Image 1 (spheres, one colour):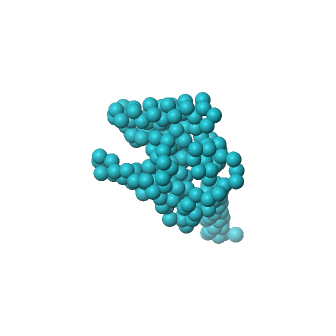
Image 2 (cartoon, one colour; image 1 turned 135 degrees about the vertical axis):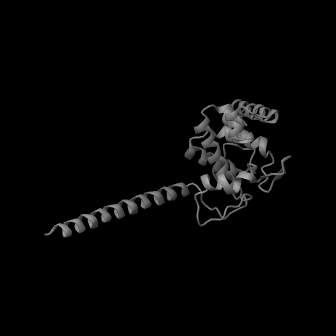
Image 3 (cartoon, one colour; image 1 turned 90 degrees about the vertical axis):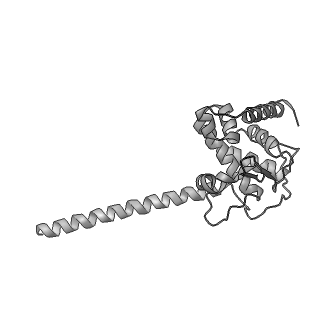
Length: 202
């Protein structure tokens, strides 16, 4: 075999190796996407339906309570913390809730996700479903993104108080020390709810 043939064979072998690596990494990526979808069942169902399991939080619809607890188990989040947020954000558990902020942005749905970030950062970072159109007024969609956001904030900021305030006022404000008085008030309400949830039977 002459030198030219050897070079060609080495080049072909190298290309085959690169192609195999790309296919392997792509397969692993899509498997990861599929794993993220396991907890998010019946995404096309917007209304609450009968859930025969005994809910942990009896003051809210059973399916909402059980979905929050299931997702918290998946994300290693404290469900009392999540519900404490929800009781401040939307104590009526209204999936169609809309709140207009002073800066003109809107807080939407079950966990009052801000529309400034919903269709950009939140959707890009926490929405794993390419074939499902995100609907902030579908309570499962909204809850799914909200809990992934909370888990991300707790992992990044480490301190619970900081993560709670970042959910309300933004992680930038917490990291830069530009926290508004309303965010401190939000923190106080959430922590009070956590205390009540952990110290009351119902």
